[in-house]
Image 1 (spheres, rainbow, N blue to C red):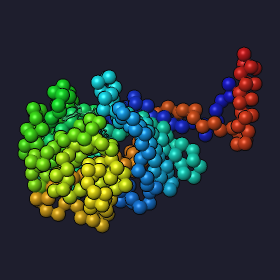
Image 2: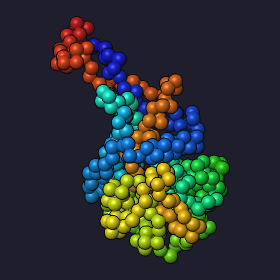
Image 3: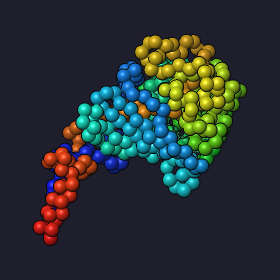
Length: 354
Ligand SMILES: NC(=O)c1ccc[n+]([C@@H]2O[C@H](COP(=O)([O-])OP(=O)(O)OC[C@H]3O[C@@H](n4cnc5c(N)ncnc54)[C@H](O)[C@@H]3O)[C@@H](O)[C@H]2O)c1
């Protein structure tokens, strides 16, 4: 066979190499650096191409494509959401993504993004809480103790100074798993038997459950004044976690309104219900938390720019680590018009070799 040209190769970050990279840098440092990258990209929000993600729904889940570009670099993520997967021994969410050079359209990096999505979601949540949560918040209720849970807890520790996390899941095995994984990570971990017990004394409430239906993880009477709610699990049409009355009492902050109105908690509200875009808080164009009694809600659904930031972060951190493989991914004949000839030459080369 002919040898591929240098430009044929695209660095590929496998799951194994992503884990190695995270361990090499340190998970809390990754979360902190990732949050800074995401915040910096939110600060230049108007520059990006933006579109609600392209979703393909089925009875059991959704498969989505999430593209964006800052004019120099393009990125997209493929991600699924299948709440029933867990019962089959599969992940609810898996993902991979690609970064490309806008000038040539050639890919710069292909990467696993299942782990990276958990990291970027947690980093985004904690970055939003930095702007919205009550000052000095040290205790968080974590409702839903699945794949994302530990990442959320550690991001809030690293970025917001969280000291105690109170865990609850309808499946006690999930809570046990999260408590075991978080032991020795510098947080006080309190497993709880109900959502009510978990929110006791918590200034921040994270909901991160998976159910393909309108669920009520928090009812109105459970949410006292002054708390910050980080709503992560409601991220699809028909899939929400909070009672509508909570939304009506909250100041609601979102990533990209055209997408969040379809997918977020606010799908339960009128299409013109006022919301604040997080990037405007970061750039000083809108107010974040005003006072100690206000309920703030980050109605997180996950937006393409967060994945773009995460991919660029990984790309920048790969240099010198060797934590990637070169994939022969781009057909790149010496004469760009002679794609067909490349196949003929390959055939000739393989028959000579035989
Ligand atoms: N907003 C974002 O950017 C973003 C990113 C990634 C994932 N998500 C969403 O976050 C959710 C969690 O993802 P995951 O990968 O951790 O899923 P997972 O399936 O691993 O975990 C979900 C957990 O929720 C628990 N649960 C379900 N119903 C519950 C209830 N009523 N009360 C308490 N616990 C309950 C389940 O037992 C399970 O342990 C999913 O809905 C996913 O789509 C959002």
